[in-house]
Amino acid sequence: MVVSSSSSWPIFAVFSILAIVLLFKAITTISEDRYFRQRRIIEKLNELAELMPPIENPQFLEFVNLLKTMKEAPMIIFYDSSNIDILRNHICNLKFIPNTLPRLATISFDRQGFEMVSSEYPQIPNILIDLEPLKSQLSSNVQNRGYIIYQLILMTRARICAALARNSLDFWAMQQDSIWTGNLVGMRLDTRFPDANLIFDTVGNDQIYNRMRGWICGSTFFVRAGVVSTQFFEQVERLMRHRQSPDSAIMTYLCGNRKYKCQKLPHWIISSSDYFLAKRDIVPVVVQVDADQKAMSKMELFKKSRFVFRHKNGTCDTSAFVRIRHSIRNALKDKMLADPRSPEPLRTRIWYKLRSLLNIDPYNNKRFLQVHESLI
Image (cartoon, rainbow, N blue to C red; front, side):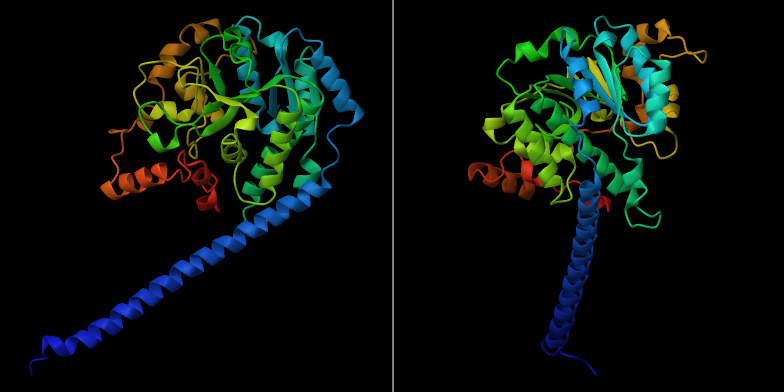
């Protein structure tokens, strides 16, 4: 028996409709599941934020007044005991760069780290803002516990930045997993951009990520004290408590408002780990090393890449700094992309062109707010 093509159309149509319905239901289920996971993260983060004691206590104000005695804006590193080895290494890195260590200050997020740094480096201003009591509020089986703690740390940093700016302190915020190949502070970027309230590093690489130009990395940035900078970081915290976005994405979004007067630095001055994805013709003054390291610790990655500036006996290794530019150029070769340009389909280019012409999020800042949604 032969079935005519005309009689098979109803069957095909039914199966097509059924497939579309099932696909739509699957997508909707995934979206709903993600939405509720996001809400749980935000709710838990808000609970922890309410439990956090006030930042601006007498000890903090004393710390601020001490930093004000420095001739130039202090460089503040946020840390805890989990990355003390990287902090020690960074201090040795800065030892070979003039006018850096006298400007260094540290803020610890746990007591163990605070006591270790206070004992080993008594000359460095150091204060404890203990997050361990808040972390203990999260049971080990809480979904996305690690991510919630990560967001808590970023939110605390934003709150601290607002407090420092409110108390009339210009400062640099930095990370200990950054490698300095030259003298960043000697470039006097804060005076080179006198009208900027905020100066930021950016993600990406000059050879790749055209759609990410201007997206803030947030590993190294300068804050000029005042009402505007205070409001900026208060808004960062406020938005972190309402949506699942990292502080860097929110800072990028806020910098779209001209009143904040943000300045973004070129990649030859400061680069994120995206530097390692493409050619290394130019070695930046500062490179943040935040490459995927699931198979090894950050210090093991540093040893493999020859980014270690500290001998086992605790003394600093001069030769490591002498060869650091060579080490940067040759590190993480397995991360290099064969073709970093990543060509886009024609429809994608047309879509972005139309958005640009209509002035619909032309710099993709709103899109950056969603970058962490796939992590949970």
